[in-house]
Image (cartoon, rainbow, N blue to C red; front, side, top):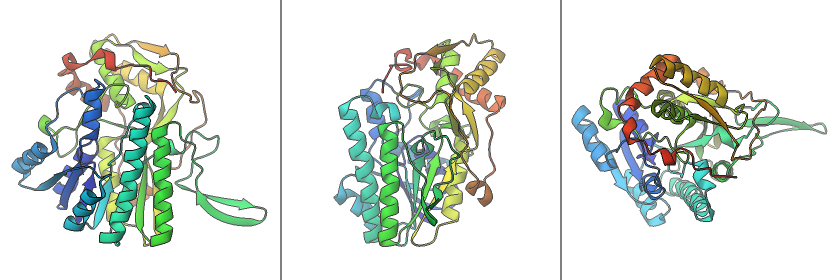
Length: 381
């Protein structure tokens, strides 16, 4: 397939580009370096420097003799995105091109407005460009499990069948996002569902949990092809953050009671899930939703696991409970369904001690780069 990856410079976008290129697809990646720029401006840069997107594609071609075409520009600009779609005419679009941080979206008014503008304008432009230039193309959109919140009932896979006063209807599962970022993702889903109904688009929305890890089949043994590894409060996911904290002797930052439970997955499983979605497109006029995670953990469980592995390295790993800066339930019911991708053939990678140790082996090489002041900034909401 000809596949257009939007946000192809990101933590997930670049590994996805390499993976799909290795699989024989014709890949074009687009990015405007928003995440790089925010990280720099907020003094929250990744653990190690990552080559720019153009250099990355050259490194990939040198290693594999396969071509990934990079395009740099702002997808909020209609003239730019329409030119990209018209010139590439993709069979499928993988849409990662959003400001991905909940804490950043809650930092201040300017960060909030930037998140709203970028995330909603890009998604709307993707919808309009698909309709105008490639109406039969399949949009694979990265959503988030955070859209659902933590309701006191089982979370179904995107949809809920409701019986009310003797009548039945199928609705999108109720959303109750816990941050502005997650709220923009809810709005993305609503936009996509609206235009699926109006224009017959084919859309897969992947409700993904937090991702951890660095290595994939494509970059193993070649650190020049690694994705960003953020460990800061703004962009670091919790497993990656805890591993960094363990390696430098910084107490693991557990917010409140630590009972907050979410669904997690290895970065390699993100790639599997995107492949499965692309290989099994929905019908015209269908919004298909998958809950994309492998296993659930509380924050306390993750901290205990990282502490246990750290001790094997002779690290003095302490766990510290902090007053929770966020408005969230710290002890709650959490039982989301996630069968769709398993039925399509997902072969999960689980968070074992060996997996944590593998990530720790890599980050130990770079621990002198850690900026401790960025680990906990106390962004409140």
